[in-house]
Amino acid sequence: MTSNEIPESSGETTSPLSSSESPTANEIATSELDSAIPKEEEQIERTKTLDEVADGVSGKGNEIGTSTDDNGSMIGSDLQTNDSSPDAKGEAEINGSSDIPGVPADDPILSSDSWSEEVEETKLESATKEPLEPISSGDSVVSSEAPVEDVTEENGTVAVSNGNASGGLPKESGPKASISPALVKQLREETGAGMMDCKKALSESGGDIVKAQEFLRKKGLASAEKKASRATAEGRIGSYVHDSRIGVLIEVNCETDFVSRGDIFKELVDDLAMQVAACPQVQYLVTEDVPEEIVSKESDIEMQKEDLLSKPEQIRAKIVEGRIKKRLEELALLEQPYIKNDKIVVKDWVKQTIATIGENIKVRRFVRLNLGEGLEKKSQDFAAEVAAQTTAKSQAPPKQEEPVAAKAEETIQKPPTVAISAALVKQLREETGAGMMDCKKALSETGGNLEKAQEYLRKKGLSTADKKSSRLTAEGRIGCYIHDSRIGVLVEVNSETDFVGRSEKFKELVDDLAMQVVACPQVEFVSIDEIPESIVKQEKELEMQREDLQSKPENIREKIVEGRVSKRLGELALLEQPFIKDDSLLVKDLVKQTVAALGENIKVRRFVKFTLGETIEDAKAGDE
Image (cartoon, rainbow, N blue to C red):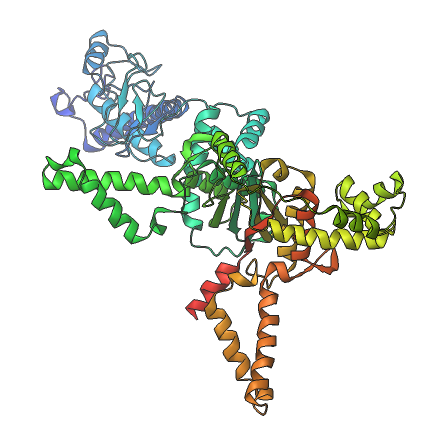
């Protein structure tokens, strides 16, 4: 070996000074330059190989799914380096093998230390080229051969050790249940909610229709609270009459007329009217409507109960508060269990309807009439009645016989009877509704003249009605009439017996009277006698101040005022109105004719009229 040759195995250069020969300076420089050029070319070639290997490793790491954790570090599954596993590094040095093909393990350029540094630099360069954050020096790369371990990070996500998942990715919640159109349709039919609301509810509840209904109910309550402050000036008047003995009139308001005419809103109003009829203890809409004096009275009664006297004052006050709250809820309509679903109260049912139709709803007012309420019932002790009648009969004075001459004179004065045909009697019955014997007698008295017979029956009916007007009327019927869902009337008409109260003629009278009230908006009372004295006095004062009467004498003026006031009071009374089906007849005369036809006393006792929105207008006027 010459002094100019450099052994590749050791990588060391022999100094020319150690040779026995002493070459010149030019020879030494030329020799060193010749030996350095091939070494430099070889090193450049091997560096290119390193770049290709590093690029391959980086690309492989990207393919196998590197990702970043919460700290911005990369986690990979199949990327393996010498510095990540010291045992593997030592094994590679012992065996003298290299991961780079074509490069010997004992190459001085690719020693273990330089290899680690080159790989680290390569990893940093490849990471900056990709849209990933650089690897921090403290993080280690996990081998793909390591067992899979799930590590829960602080933010609730999962990092998988083999690279399938990392801390930076959200945790999968599992596959969502597929929502079929049939299921959405079923939920819509059962709840009345919108299609998208039903679909969302089913998605949130995993397709469970029961949970979806609960989801919609809770959502409905929340949305109803938001709509509670919106104005409600539209709506409808509803009614419910049970067996003609209990009648309910109710007003429920909404925001638009469009909603008020919908089936959902109509069903709500009908159900609320039925709810009032089914809860006889209900007197108010909400507990806040209960007068303070009633609350105070109930509290005093509860405080004096024996089971509370031995309790401490604080405990007793809390017990009384709970009892009073329960008692007040019994009096409030919106606190009652819903009659069609006792698991919810009425106020929650209203809120669910608000969520369904998307408008605010307010139950404005209601009234309930019970047939014969407050009236004295007729005695049902038949034995006592028979005994009283027997005693009265035994005490009656003996009847004196009339002289025979008087009887003969009376017989002579009677006009000759006229033969009355059955067809004529039938015609008179159909036109007047009187009994067969009454019609026959009327025709006999009038000589078969149909018009005179009708006048005869009318006069007889009025006199008969006057005679029966003092008889007790505790039975009868409650009727209603709703006009276009905007005006509603309940009317109670009493008769003597339940038999007459259920007859068709009596029912027709009640229905006509309810319609009459709707047709007369100025009517406020049943008869003139019911008009308060304060109103009568006010009307007289107004008439007396009229300018056209100031020049009249005092006595003349009083008579004129009396006539005007009487006319004005007649406009306020139902019985003084012209009958809507025959304006030649007053309502009071219609009632008397029915009394004559049915043979029992009839009394129009009371009526109630609701006009949609009238209380809202009154409230606005009061605020102004």
